[in-house]
Image (cartoon, rainbow, N blue to C red; front, side, top):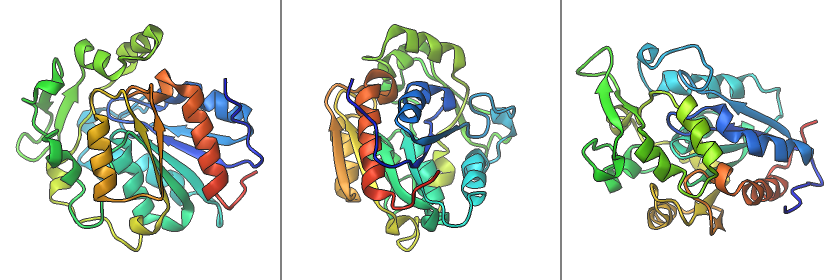
Length: 270
């Protein structure tokens, strides 16, 4: 295993993707804590062990509130390394926009990377991910809860789609996912009508993108298109990673995050 031990201690905050929870980072939590870092993995609303249900959420802001609360509560002067996976790229982007002074670097792990010109859903529209009839979705079930006209479109992943996400991950992690995944949403309709993120907020924070070459959902070509659309400070590549890089290549991802933290996080959190 590559040595992820850092010369400095940083506060690393993990933000999961759609339908997942803090649990999906369990390997990275162990590796980075053993390397001396402070690590926080949070559950977004109605995710993981959060007590709310998807039907309790009105919008993306409700879904993202736990991350906003975490950053708002940071002591003055603290700056975190904010890591978002998949849909979590939009969660960290909104948080960076609101608290740019509290984020040393945003790390996008095969994650949606919005720009500061188009609505946040622009990255969905490029590949029509908001379309539930897209063959990619396989056995994912879609529906609406509450407000049938204006409520967010819900999604529940089926085993065929989950196997696509975890195509190179250990079977134990696939089994774990099938027991813990919860209904969620891309919030595509809402984000399509949202204003672009700001250049002075989100645009001002350093960004690193981790390309996962064997991702069969957000394919490497799409990941690189997002980077071309909104260039980042640095690109890292994991050749053997599927969509769930924290499961399929945890040592390499841990090493990258530790190196990124050392490079971009100037404030040392004890």
